[in-house]
Length: 348
Image 1 (tube, rainbow, N blue to C red):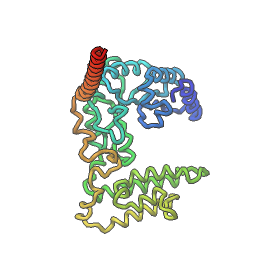
Image 2 (image 1 turned 90 degrees about the vertical axis):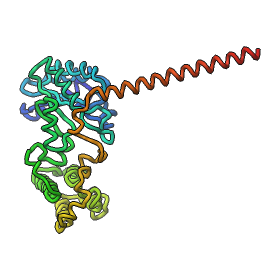
Image 3 (image 1 turned 90 degrees about the horizontal axis):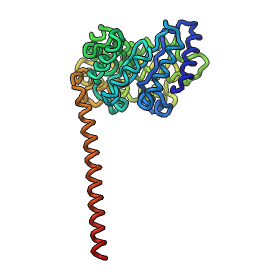
């Protein structure tokens, strides 16, 4: 939200509901979704009114006890000058740590590209000039365990945060996740994720008792991510069943979801090594993480060394081009007016 008092009241309500056992409150100022634009929060609030964001963080820090952490997550602004102004103001609000997603507001979904590790590093350097011990967490471009290690090393961050990749591979932060070497092993891993998740749902929830079928959409969303490689293009009928668009065969319960996973396992059970290697699901771009990313586009470590000024240079060049076009247009209009005046003078 963008209302200071409302955010503070919500935080205090959560604190009371947890009997004071609240570990922390994080203000997400990095959300690029259109609903955040309409509601004036997330990354849109940060770009429209960063001062309001600082007011919210100061109020949270003032009203919550010191043992409850207050933190924020942001995206990179387009200009380094803005970054140099923004980071000190955020640190001075008294927050306990800051998470930085190394992409701008517009670099999301189909426009997503490589994470700007150098600019995360710049932000960290700025923060540590004010407080050498201030913790900054890096975020973005982490598809696997090695990507995490590379980004930590490149930026100097104290920790890493994942959002999308973690939803598909919950063991992302475990070094053991690097031991997956064959298509068969990856398939077993993803179906095991799905089965374990359904086991948890059956005992802990969701769906929540009494809520109805609408809460099952939460289960669907997670299963789509776990199984995306296989049901998106290779098993479209299972995809439709899970989506709830296949009439009476649609999945609406935990037991039906288990049957779908078992059906998927049976379809791949007798494949030879050559058949496995020929599947489209074995390609890197088949993952849910890369659903918005073109196969040839780098998304993580290979572009980490790209200089920050390359992005700014491109922006400055576009600004100059637009300025030159405007000047040319003005000259043409002025010339046209002079010509019209001369013709009028001759006629009179």
